[in-house]
Length: 418
Length: 80
Image (cartoon, rainbow over the protein chains, first blue to last red):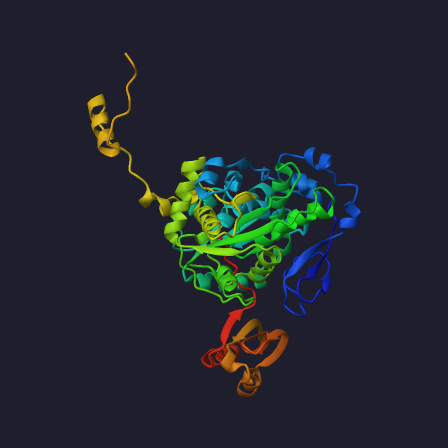
């Protein structure tokens, strides 16, 4: 049973009923869901969670919607893998990968959209909408299909074909907006004001954001009910980053894990790094940027939760870093070639960001580190394709194969003993 | 009539300038400050502007010309 009770402004503290709204009417601060944690004391136990479904909805008690009303396409409870090979490369003895590539639409966005679509249906919306450059569009289209809702998905007209198909297959009204990124942004803000639709990242944003907490919940459960020493996550709006930490804290508040000073560090692509830039300047003031990076899923130039992400990293003794596009590609390859996980560009940002943090002594070699890999690589193949070795092209005979192999590798492998 | 929610960010050299007072004098726009943070080095103000759409846009163009940064309060809507 959900114990979400109201919405509260994160700036002035003013409270509102649970309704489709994301901004405080008085100070225009962002709203957040407030829970009655006291009502959960004694009710939520490790055993109760472990007996739940093998999805994010095993944590339904900590989400703003009842489990029986969930729009669930099997999201979450994704693998937490020990990563000894990547750990050796980076100089970390206890590195784990939280592999959120394996969600139903291949990114962590299924977590937030699962909650947003469930809440939207509770509020009796018949249309689910979003503006997106990829992952979110895929997830909104899929969840609307499952929920029996209409989907209206707005994308920039120059989006890659693969991402368009990944949304179009679910049958949404797909709108390719002819204009700049800012034009798409403005249009969708105006549409959100005009039409009675649930825009997942506008009017149901407080609920939507809560879905990311389940990443924090799952990691603690999968580590044997303990919090990690250090989390490294990608930052776009900053919401995911702050909610992972909120998920960890909630389990401690409820006595399900011991209190532990987990450090939170964030990674961005240098071509769009307003949060990391403010961190480096030692400032609380985020300067918006015009995104220019291949890591499009992180390309938010004016991040809504940037300030709160800074607050989380500073209060936990974490830090922030930014990596070049070349490092993003290196990171994708490094993860794939050491651990067999093909991540999208945001994963490359995390792996290369973690490498930088270790080199700079900002992550300790023996910490229990969890790197959050939030989307699958098949979505952004074009980013990494030019850096990969082409296949050996051979004729269908052994001589041709050996000639090509010797040319590539210098020597031939040992043959079977006769 | 239209209303917009907007954020002005002032650099150090503009902190002492009464930009919002001038805006209300020069243009037929109602200004309503909701939240602000001003230090010696920089400042930001979140406010609502009410007026005819064209007049609001003219007023914001003028604010930009004063070297004040103007951003929408909703921040980025498009996500990855």
